[in-house]
Length: 233
Image 1: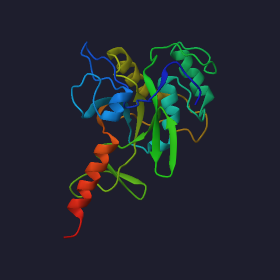
Image 2 (image 1 turned 90 degrees about the horizontal axis):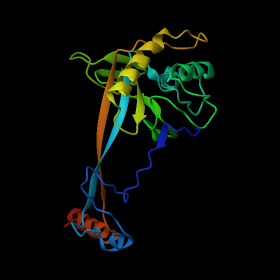
Image 3 (image 1 turned 180 degrees about the horizontal axis):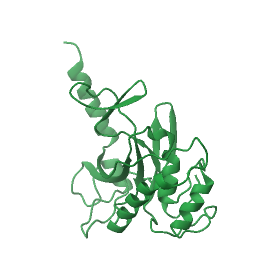
Image 4 (image 1 turned 135 degrees about the horizontal axis):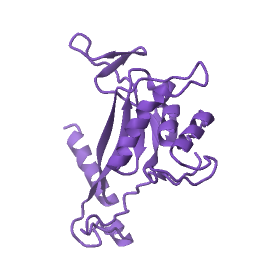
């Protein structure tokens, strides 16, 4: 994927701590990695919560047929495959951007999106958008259906497109994302294979991830305890 000023890498290594609201958080140093102690000697346990944001666009069709085109039009950011150059150029003009072939991007979504690893079993890619499960829907043999008492949930149905956000969007950015997602249906098709789904709703998802670290000695000690509990009498 080509570099873009509004696309940030989601490289969040655990030992990197920053200030938050004027409250100092633990800072790890080489000694702390050996002894398991923080630089401020508060606690040997290393744990923190990381918040990730995702903007989800729900439809009633399988999103794998149009997620790249929809993401390019909504954001104005080229994906790895350059799915639709004409659609991307139109999005850049509407967002008052510049030539998409240049490494810079000036627009309302500066530094808003980030690239993440998208894992589909044996296929891993890095992108800022992907299909995501749609709540209230299920899937059997490639046929999505609404979950009900007569038809319970079986497997996830991927009728939604998720845009990975590096931070919480402002009210203006969120309103613009919703408006552009709904406007995608009105864009003329370039070929007969193009999909223009109806957007049912948009959701802002907040995911809280707890990251923990421990010393090698603590890890080995806990592993010995687990083996002792599971060992036959």
